[in-house]
Amino acid sequence: MALLTPEEVLDCIAQHKPLHKAELSQLNLTGQVLAGGDFTKAYLRGGKFAHATCQATNFTGAILHFANFSDAVVTGVNFTGAELNSAICNGANFSQAKATKIKLYGASLNYLDAQGADFSQADFRESHAPHANFAQAVGDRAHFGAAKFTEANFSSGSFRRTQFIQAQLEQTQWQQATLDKANFQDASLRGAQFNQAQLIETNLSYTRLQDIDFAHAELLSANLSNSILTQVNFTQASLYEADFDGARLIEVNFDQANLENANFENTAWQGTDFSTARVKGAVFTDAEGLTEVQKEWLREQGATNVPQ
Image 1 (tube, rainbow, N blue to C red):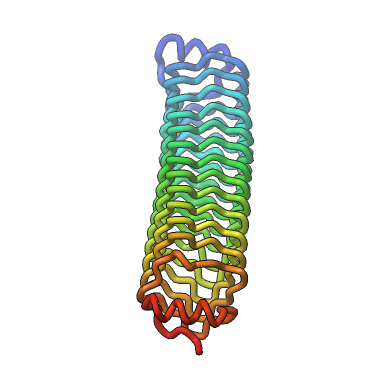
Image 2 (tube, rainbow, N blue to C red):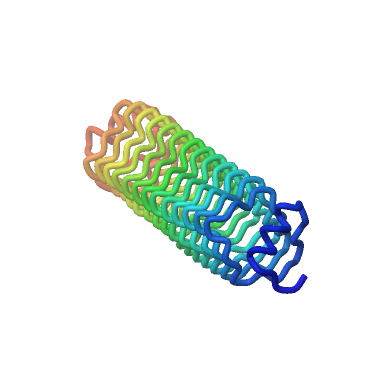
């Protein structure tokens, strides 16, 4: 289909005519109602959809690089495999959107509402989404490398095997989220809340963890090696077989935490209290900064290789 005017596109939508593979670059549909439109594999580079209403619209496989969806309502829209690299979606409502394998590389997503949306295997690398809402969203195997999502909400979401390498995630919310085998290596997580989150085999190595709450979280076999932990709260968290090799722990709270079989080799301790934790089988080879009272208590509780 050749280039169409906005009026012709709206007429096609009204008549339920599909716009498959249509050449529609720079199309201006600002503020229009596009409910039920079918733009499958259409070429919409630079399209203008700000303030548009797009419920039940189909953008499967569409090319939307540099498109503008600011303040648009796209609830329940199908973006499966669509490409929105460098798109502007500030303030848009993507709740319940079907966006598996969507590409949002370098996109601007400030205050995006994506509650309950499916972003499985999505590409968010280098995108900006401060204050975005991903509560109850699915982002399994998605890629957030070097993305900026400060103060975003991921609570009760599922982000299994998701990549957050070098992402800026300060003051983010992860309560009751599922993050098994996610990778936060070298991410910035200051002030993040992980209360009751599930982080089984999650990679938090080489990460600066400050003012973070992991109370009641599940961190079985999590990797925190070579990380710096400052004022982190692990109250009643499960850290069974977690790996802290080479980590620095400063004023960390392990109140009633399960540290059984955890690895604390080559760690440095400062002002940290674990006197109510379970430490049977935990390894403390070459750990530094432990007081004599702490060393004696660790031995009595079944910890191993506690320094003399």
